[in-house]
Amino acid sequence: MDQKKLLNDCLKGKASAQQELYALYAKAMLGLCYRYTKSMADAEDVLQDGFIKIFKNLHQYNGSGDLGAWVRRIMVNTAINYLKSQDHYQYDLSFVEKNLHPVSDENPELLLNAKELADLIRQLPIGYQTIFNMHAVEGYKHSEIGKILGIHEGTSKSQYARARALLISWITRNSLDNKTGIYARK
Image 1 (cartoon, rainbow, N blue to C red):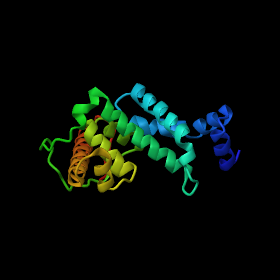
Image 2 (image 1 turned 120 degrees about the vertical axis):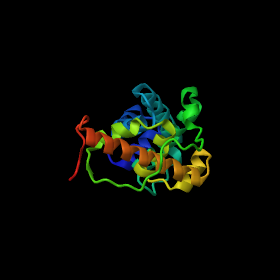
Image 3 (image 1 turned 30 degrees about the vertical axis):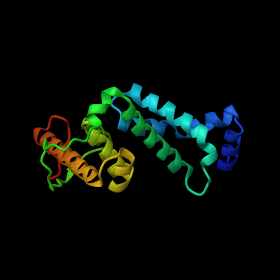
């Protein structure tokens, strides 16, 4: 089924078209949701909420851009709203300026596969993880992140720098310890 017909059938409420649209994007969007949350159960809740919003607002998609990008943006916003609404994420999203980890400009050349990096990103405190995902993975600008999260652009930049520095320190330490199978490139 072509995309235009699929969208029209979804707008008409045809369950088979909605299932097809869901099947087209669900796997990738579950991965996106999991990057923002700390459990698969939370990620599945975000995915479900996101698809409800997608089907409810599909009439707003004007077809001028990529449908996948539109779906992704809704999922990112849904994930962020979920984090803001859940008590167990509230403290971690406070973005209090604190000097827990020094910011470093080090950039070690490392051999690191995508799964290992994703696992390390998930170990970041939720605030760092959210901003790191939004900037480094999703491509949001710090000014956009600031507006979405209700923080200053400078806070977004500093949280991103701290997340990056923390990841670099973990990668460097782990590569030196050889405990995780992550090896520094010589």
